[in-house]
Image 1 (cartoon, rainbow, N blue to C red):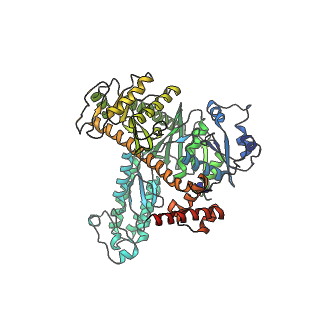
Image 2: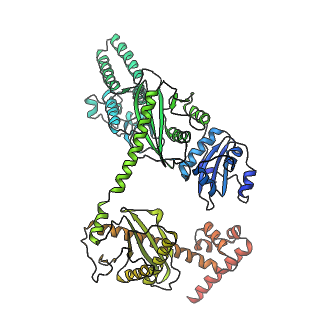
Image 3: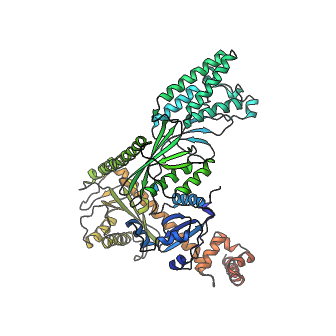
Length: 628
């Protein structure tokens, strides 16, 4: 079964229908629905076996819903549908869309991109090494490993038992035949079989790699049984050195097996999953059990979990874990049944190509193991709360330095900076950037077009922006910065301070940072403060100021380019803003429009308008030539 391509999705809901009309015309097919707010933001993505009955449930007042769903329904202004052939396709598409769009009211698993994997590369003679990047098609990945010690022990065991190459040579049959490589020290100390010079065939090397993969999957007993059979055969054929080498591998694997935690004597492979939640956070834990031993565990943090039930969290967890996982067991044990368990089972069975069962842990059986999984989930959830408290209490060194050097009453955890940009008084704009704990928070950056100031007047422009920013903060009761910076010297600082005084914000901390000598101007001080160039506080202030300047210049250039591009086309009779935008989109620039043929122009704006455009540029060229 192929996965639906998110890039090819077209809304099946006509945009000219109201929400109530769309609800009345919902199809009964399986598919995915997206709830959107009035401003077009995706609020929630869900899948259904019957779109009509599932979507309409949200709008039935008689059906009880939690506060989270009630808050979401109050914001719904539109619904978009994507129909699929089966419920399993809808499940896959739902998972892809949630990961891509991260809607506010969906349960979202946080990405743990820092955990390492062990990769077996996809090469004629594969390598085995640690990586933190997953590249599609590069090979088979095992992990991720949250316990690096366990991962390194597994890798050390594999390299000590199996003679896997460690070089980076690109080995192919033709390069080996041409003798382009020479064996290295690993071959001489019996750490590699020397595939670079053809001392081991690709088939023999591949058989060894399959044993490596079996060990990483936890099928160690199977590998040991195969090695014992090979050892017996080698001894019978009087190949005693080969038999001794196989004996040593078996002993090493026995040591590896003994160090794994035994939880039962069953040979059945399974994954055990438990979830714990508190407020808006949740944590899921996966125990990977192979041949009765825990070969690995991993925890997953879940955001936006408030109001979600255990079955909902389990469904999201299973979708995330097994969307990329390659080692799928025949049995998945959970603390309770997840939502859409039938569709999940069909999807996983399709991925594994053999039947998979998702079962709730029965009373008595596996009770100890499931209790352990729940305890681990609760531990990691508590650990998340502790880490948040530590982050809240800790203060970056640079922020403390700013407080000390500027003699501020409080630590400036939130710093905002305003910069003005214009070209000889035209297209004046301003930027406001926000740094929290010394790091940029780009989601809160703002840009302003100067409305009340004519010409190049940085002082008046600064006053306008400060007034707009703080009047809105007072009106909407939003947070104030711990420190306000203005890009400039005493003039810009005085203009900003006057506005703050008019608004009654005399206690707002504010400084100005001039570019020429990196002077820091403080309220009430005649002389600027000069800090050493190596000062951490000066470096942070410079970083904030430079970011504000970069953001302002980028916005200014965009505004100026837009004005310059549109002005020339706007002078042509019959070409309005909409047609000008179409022409620029098709031809790329005014020059592209100018040198386009009449036939090309007619395809975009029609013959009459195309003739006007051609006449305009022809007369413009003639006027230029006569002037020359």
